[in-house]
Length: 110
Image 1 (cartoon, rainbow, N blue to C red):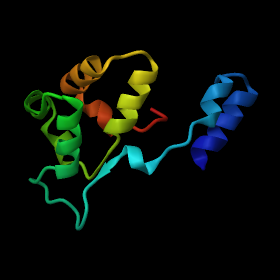
Image 2: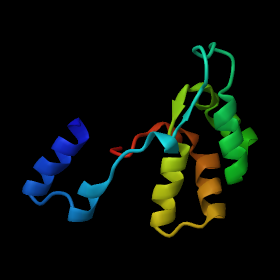
Image 3: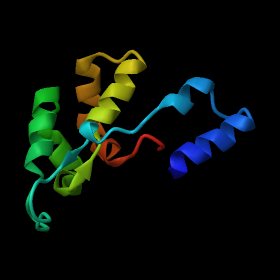
Image 4: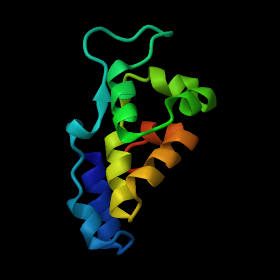
């Protein structure tokens, strides 16, 4: 709700292009751990599955940002969709996420 208000306000001042105001954040583009909260040492299994399906070098991501793989909520599919809309191929997306794994913790508004 705050995001849509912010976008409407920014659009009224012409700070945001019209097409951005139609973005809706969908929970299906995010990984969440099912069940109880993750312990501090366990990795998010659904996130690891999604990253493997995307072709991400999980070993490299784990080496660069090990805490990211333990997050209960991530946005890897949203980041992939955003990059794909910008013209990135699946291989380039996998390379970006492998090198900058913290990107999957960011929301659409970031």
